[in-house]
Amino acid sequence: MKKEILVQSAIVIVLLLLISIPAVKSLFIPGGFTAHDLTHHVVRQISMDKLLSEGQFPPRWSGELNNGYGYPVFLFNYPLPALLGEVFHELGMGYVTAVKAVLFSSMILSILGMYLFLKSLLGSKLAPFLGAVFYLYAPIRFLNVYVSASVGSALGAAILPFVFWSMVEISKQRKWAFLSGGLFFGLLILAHNVTTLVFTPLILTFATYLVWQSKNRGRVFSNLAGTLLLGLALSAWFWLPAIIEKQYIIFDSVFGDFYKSQFVSFYQLLRSPWGYGLSHPQNPEPGDMSYQLGLIHFLVIVLLAVCLIFIKNLRILGGFVLIFFWGSVFLMLKISLPLWENLGFLSLIQFPLRFSALAVFTSSIAAAILVKYLPFKKSVFMGLLLLVLYANRNHWHINEVFDPGKDYYLNHKTTTASYNEHLPKWGRAMEKRTGPKLEFVGGGGNVQITKDYSGLVLAEVEATTSSKLRLNQFYFPGWQIKVDNQEKDFNYLIDGESYGLMVFDISSGKHIVLAEFKNIPLRNLADFISLTSVVLWIGLLCKLLMPHLFTIKKSS
Image 1 (cartoon, rainbow, N blue to C red):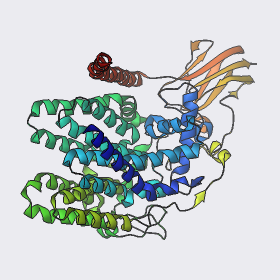
Image 2: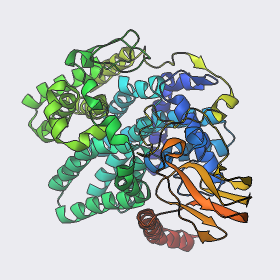
Image 3: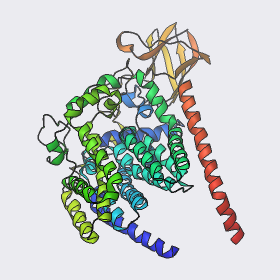
């Protein structure tokens, strides 16, 4: 029986992989491609490789970005895509190919994960297969990969179904699901914090639904709450400093009202031309990106609403799906502006269109529900399958090949953010590199840099007179300067060219200068929480596996 189940599962996986081929085949074209953010992510991949090679973990500060003046790239930008990309890079892939491998992985994992989730939730065969295909073949998924190359959004969409799968398995009181749920929720936060924010209400509501329908509500509630807390703890090293230290950056001034220009119309959600340009939904320009949700995804939602009238036992789960689908649509329309203005956290989402990920997720559940509960299952399955593939036939392509060569990316040292939104309030985007990491700005002498890392600069300095030295890195909490092993005061709020860069006095003679980006107490606390939770997770895993290991040993 077990062998038969394994064979059936293998067949399903093969079929899912085969049906994914049209969606991912463009990623096998050699080189990069024109997209909004692909260059940014390739440069971040190079930065991640450098930081890890220098021993900076967790990676937070890049001394090479912002044209060599420093940028807190992974203190605020989701680190998981670049960490996963580093695995591919260490396997021998180039930086561009490593980023494309992350995009490829996001597509494949999403269809497999959605199948697992719907299989666990609904229990049938055809229904989860169709729902998984609906989840992959949706305009927003191709927009994330081929138009914007938003690696974080793409990877977040891939991890989401595994979070919901673990939650369903927890409700069935599978012991291992507590650990998988914590792991996947933590990975979701590290993959894309905005996706996590968008889906948190759905996650919490779905958890409430699972508790309500369970016979052992107390245990299911405690396990679901525990797994979400575990995920928060595992990822605390990223999200806790990012939330508290956001006060030091220009993010709010850049994106405070940005969403007001990004609301779409209902018609644009139904139909808008497929393009590879930027987002101007209220003043469209030729070639702009598309805002459509997918006509077939709307169709299954309408059919589900009709079915709820006649099938009573669908009303709870179906109602849950409909409420969140139409709620996400509402939040993309300008009619929801008062809500955006009064709920400050919504501005963090920046683009209302990001709620389309929630609409696609719920409409994929709707497609699966229809196949499970409607008569003529095979006909419904084949009809909807062919329709969703046909409707997305023009979306699974890159626009143009863009392959400027490795040196282009190695020399591309911007902030890797289109709006430079994570610059410190006292810093600015630098157009070019003007000097070494450490230089005289008063007095004179000689500087010999012996170690030049992102988070550590070591130099031998000989000053001919009492002088001023400048560390050409924008200050951010954590920077410390020592002269001859004694901590040195510095000023970074000096008018003129030095504003935001660290300047300090030095006496005449020979000195050893060490500038180091160190953890502040908040980051130490966040790292401690995550490290403790990793140890706890491993301990619980060992405890779970121990009886099985003894059984294997005894039987052998």
